[in-house]
Length: 191
Image: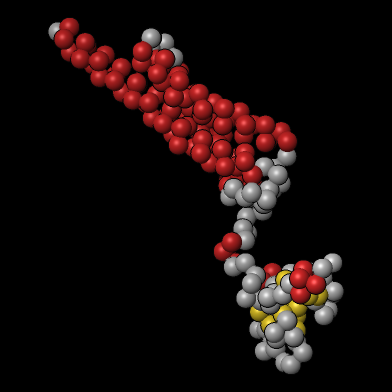
């Protein structure tokens, strides 16, 4: 390794992991280089609070709260939300995304050519929106798009599909409302 590169890299004194020259915390073992001790993770603190025993103040050489740990609010306590996205559910999410992408074309076709698809828009997109909501509530991978996830792009497209599904449901409901008003007017004009 050249001297310029080796001067930018240092190693952790605890686990010998490579660190940047300006690193403060070793992400491999949790050793804080300035405090010269390990820091506890937020999960360890959560486990202690479940035991209902107050955590003692750290003595010299003991660990303390890790300021770089994620906040508790970022960690979902809902076991249903933490399910791993399997391939079957990922394919179902792809179907919902592709149906949502067809909504503008279906609407234009209905308005320009014929109104035949309009009565089917409300039940079809309401069903798709219900499935979207179910998948969104079950899988953290879909709920919070993350570029590090194997389904990161799908999750982003999945979140973008929501507005189209809502619009499809809304246009279908609008069609039924207009049809109801027209039917009511015709019924009142008969008298």
